[in-house]
Image 1 (cartoon, rainbow, N blue to C red):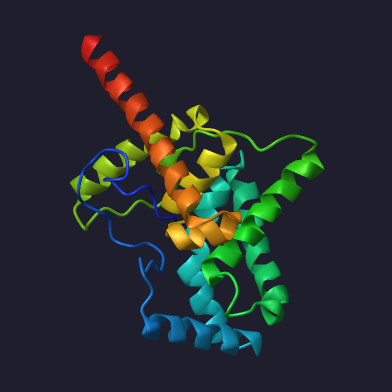
Image 2 (image 1 turned 180 degrees about the vertical axis):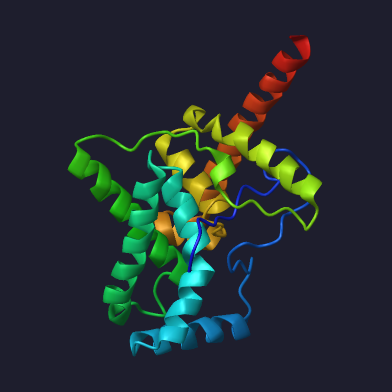
Length: 222
């Protein structure tokens, strides 16, 4: 349970490269029945205070929670503290979680979103649009060091363009490509329908592609 770990924007999401990095956190794109049963078992065991189950849930979801919060909070220490608080609140609320409700990852990200809002409410400010130092995040390519560097550079370009998105578009992008939720999970986390999430993702990716293309043209002409 150590280190600031996160899943990043897959190199294909904006750049068009048809390759995805290895998972940093547990990330079944479409959970199989066995995977769902396994997570249900872990949650049920965690409810009884089983430290092993709690540890597995923590390790599986730490990356997506920290990555999401870090893109919204100015200081790394604050992001780490808030991430720890998410799991404390998860434990406190685990008895109230319903398997038939929002997917577990969506439910966890709702806790994270509420904590970030509370954090800024206490400060008397609004959620910042950050350009994160990607170097502080543990980026994994596909086992190839060159691929890891390529992914890190792509991430730096994308995070620098997040200010071009609306608040809603940015939230969907962070949940989709930083917290690594699928369409259904993102819909559950935001309270929107799946078609709306798809439309927001399409519009946001279009804006980011346009910004990156403009940046490439500007660099070439310099």
